[in-house]
Length: 265
Image (cartoon, rainbow, N blue to C red):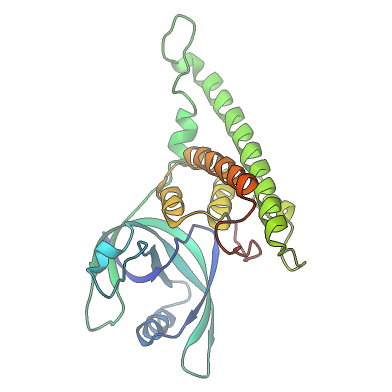
């Protein structure tokens, strides 16, 4: 269990996604100053956790107002402002589960007791899509068939990645057409997809952060530890959103900038 500074926001942060922030509240100015006192090679990061819709952190117990899975934000650049605030750029780091929220006078910002959440990449690659796979005779795959199972799993992941990439490209095109916000400043969707080429995990977080999903949908994607299952959920969500776009002919919320700089770390 670790104790980290906490920065509640209205939407989840995902690993590898760049998050610029304007820091103006006194307590978070203090947070930035405290981080700057740490060695550059150290852990200059804080936890970002989404606020539950309709909840005010200041009016209820913070732990009740916040979702229980968040992501660290690694401090990348800091620009002090003349009014004492900061413009900072952070990048999403590691996922964690919120165990408790610590409220104190010093430091004035929230802190969180957390446990780190591991990705299931290695485990799911080893297991692949073994669910439902049987060898002749109806037995579960044994050691002799593990290579075949792994090959099938890798192939199914490639198909899943291509499918989600294609759906995402269609989705961005549909939203841009409906909103008319293609202004030349946004990077081409193909460029974004090339940036995460060969990295299913990065693709899954790109889609989760860029699509116009509800906070609940995004939070569920953040809480999912397995890339394969995250991509499967995104495939369903993108198909749902495309159907709604075609049926209603309007987007459900103001277009988020797909152009926001994103890291593929």
